[in-house]
Amino acid sequence: EPEVTQTPSHQVTQMGQEVILRCVPISNHLYFYWYRQILGQKVEFLVSFYNNEISEKSEIFDDQFSVERPDGSNFTLKIRSTKLEDSAMYFCASSVDRGATNEKLFFGSGTQLSVL
Amino acid sequence: TQLLEQSPQFLSIQEGENLTVYCNSSSVFSSLQWYRQEPGEGPVLLVTVVTGGEVKKLKRLTFQFGDARKDSSLHITAAQPGDTGLYLCALKRGNNRLAFGKGNQVVVIP
Image 1 (tube, each protein chain N blue to C red):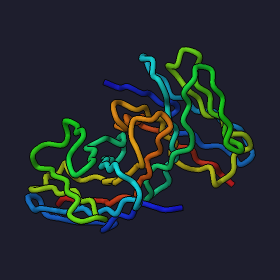
Image 2: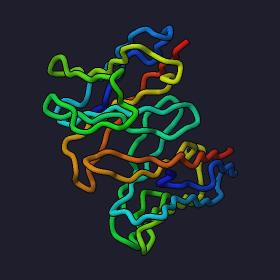
Image 3: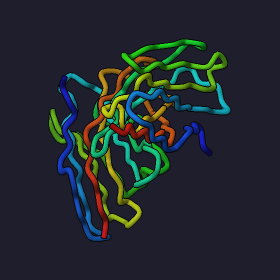
Image 4: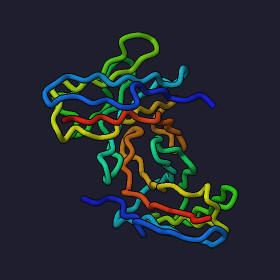
């Protein structure tokens, strides 16, 4: 089965540094998402992206965050100036469509971000 | 606000036993999804339930959507060690924006 690929699997950074998390969604998918999971807490929605623009974002997705699809295959999440509380597992996901009740999101294996 | 509450948070059983975990809400939802997440991996969709009272089976897993569409259960028959994982329920808010519960951590001991 096709899969969403995320790199790196682990990222350690100093507080205040910029990080870019990378994702390669499934090739025929049109909708892309970032979620995060802080240790011991729920998986939380950050942002959805379609047709080269943000469709929806949560209150977590503030000005420190940005997303980009720089080419035909990659989808990136940038955190401009990391904070300790940004430490989490970040999941990329993609889907063919949106809105349909049975629409299936495919998640990547995640990038574990540790901010020191 | 806790939209979805899952119980129990943690459950450990012996191989071959049956188990049931629950996902509840005070609100009615149009559909609900169940995912399984293994350590170091992303959630994987198991099933979507839509109709009140609906029952769906996936091998030894039985998913039920409550008649009032405010709760759901997952029953595993004759659990195997491979069933170990974090079971997450989620509902869609808007266009594929998923709101997850905290999960039911299931451990099946050989």
